[in-house]
Image 1 (cartoon, one colour):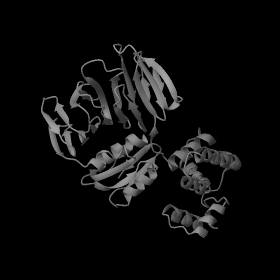
Image 2: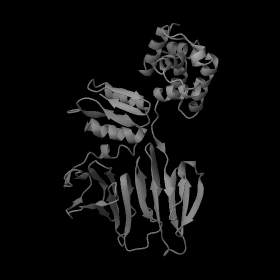
Image 3: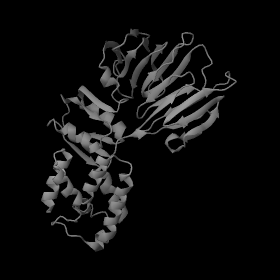
Image 4: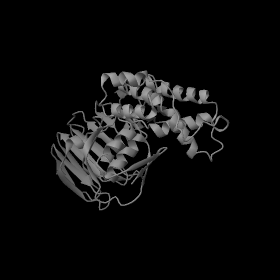
Amino acid sequence: MTQEEYIKLYEKYQEGKLTEDEEQSLLNYHDDFELAEYQWDEEKMGVKANVQAEIYNQISKEIHKTSSKRNFTWLAAASILLAVFSLFYYFQSQDKNLNDNQIVKKTLIQEELKPGKNGAILKLSDGSEIVLNETKDGFVKYDGNAKINKQNDLLSYKSGDNTNESVFNMIYTPKGGQYKVELEDGTKVWLNAASSLRFPTVFNDDKRVVELQGEAYFEVAKNKNKPFKVLVNDASHHKKMEVEVLGTHFNIQAYHNEDFKTTLVEGAVKVNNQSQNSFILTPGEQSTLSSKSEKLVVKKANVKEALAWKNGLFIFDKEHIYTIMNKISRWYDVEIVYEGNMENKEFVGTISRDESLSEVLKTLELTGTIKFKVEGRKVIVK
C-alpha cells in the first residue's frame, strides 16, 4: 500500500465510509513510510528505531483509556506519525536544545488535544487543599462537624452530631475540569469548567447561602423554612447578582467578562442585580445581566442550549464565535487568538464535548466561514 492509498483509506475511516475489507486492510497495514522530501537525519533527529518506539509508547498509554473506535483511530494514526514527525522536525530544526522525547511530546500535542474530564480541588476551612481526582473513593475528612465523602466523582457532605459548628469550604474546577457536589442539605450542584462554589459545611442559619463564580447547575433540596440563595460574584469576588429559591432546578452562567444568565428549568426563582432590580422567573425563562450595562432582562430560554454542558454537549443557537471559543477555551484548556474580522460569525449546531479539539474545530470549519490553526495549546481563529 502506498502512502497516498493509506491516507485516502484513513480519511474514509474518519468519515465513517470504510467497507469491512478496507477497514481490515487499514488494520493490517504496519509498514512505515516517510515523506520523500525529508530524509531521516540520524545525527540530528536521533536513532529512528528509538524515536519510533517512543511515539508508539506515548500512544499506547492512551489506548486503554479510550473506546474501541478511538483505539482504532490511534492505531491507524500511529503509522503516519513518523511522517508527521519528520515535518515537525523540519520546521523546528533551529531549536538545537530539543531532545527526542520533547519533540515526540510536542508532535502528539499538536496531533490531539483532548476534552476536559471530571476533576476539581477542594479547599478546606484551614486553607489546605485536596485534589479530588487524585483522591481515592471513600471518607475524605471531617471539617466543621461535617463528614466529607467522595464516591464516583461525587463529593458529598453529611452533618454530624454538633450541627451548630459550621465552617466554609470551596470547590473549584480548573479549565478542562468539571465536578459534582452534594451539599449537607441534599442540594446537588454540577460545576462546569473554570468555576468555583463557596459554601458552609452545615447550614445552621435560617437561610442557605452559597457563592458562585463561573457556571453551575443546581437541584435545590426543598425547605420552606430555609430559603436557598446563590450569590453570584465577579472576578474580584464582588457580589453582582443574587438568585433566591425555595426548591428548584436552574442553571447559572456567570463567567468574567460575559453576560450572567440564569435559566430556570423547574420551580421559581427571584433574580436581583446590584441595582435591586428583580424578576421572578417561571420555568423556561432566562434572565440576562449584561456585562456592559449591568441591565437585567428576562426572555424565553433555550433550555437545551443552557444545559448542554451538563449533558455532555456543545449546542450553538445563532451563537457568536467569541462565545463559542470561550467555551472551547475553558473545556480544552487552550488559549484563543483572533485574526481578521469576526463580525457576523454566528453558528448553529450540536457537537459532543467528548470529541477531541481537532474534531470540534473541523466541524465548525465545515461551515466554510471560519478557519483554525492550532499551535501547541494556542488556537488561532481566522
